[in-house]
Image (cartoon, rainbow, N blue to C red; front, side, top):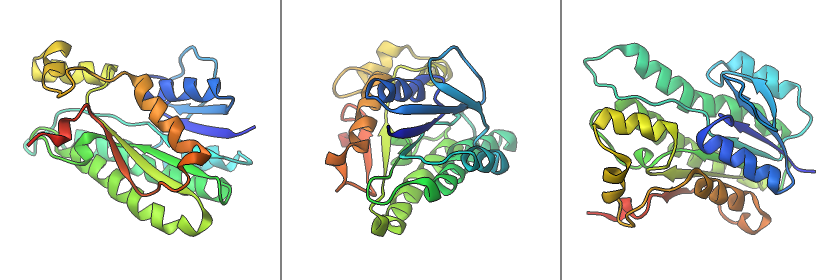
Length: 229
């Protein structure tokens, strides 16, 4: 049986990934800060806490795939409170780093897989999202560098960069912008918002043997938004 660790796997994209993996026959371990009713094994872990992350992975014998979905978001400007900046960087960027570092010794050569959930904001900027853009750009850069660092082991490392996805985090952003989901969808070339399941499906594909030649990439799932001038 293949073993996967999914961070932030209790809601949103992370929950969809965990559910899809289970349907594919994987043994799934979910890491998160809040336990919720779920069929998956769960360990409480704040991925921003390097000591806690090392403790979790130190108790595992093998990890075939790591999917980093944990993260937080929020509008911040440089004249605001520094606490939100640090919380977003710690969760999204440092958390991804901590988990990858802890998982690498457990990933098998030739078949090990890492997928980092970044964002379209890891590929472009938004004025009031300085911390989130910085964190997700960091995740994309880290993904590319790590992919090269472990290429000789036959381990692949890729990032997915979703645009609007039907999640609680997106709803929070709609409220910040004062728009509805329908208005957000109108700004997407395809005219629709992705489901968390679509991101999960792309994740599953990157974990399959057929994707072994794909590494170091940041794949947008944005309905064509990044193709706009």
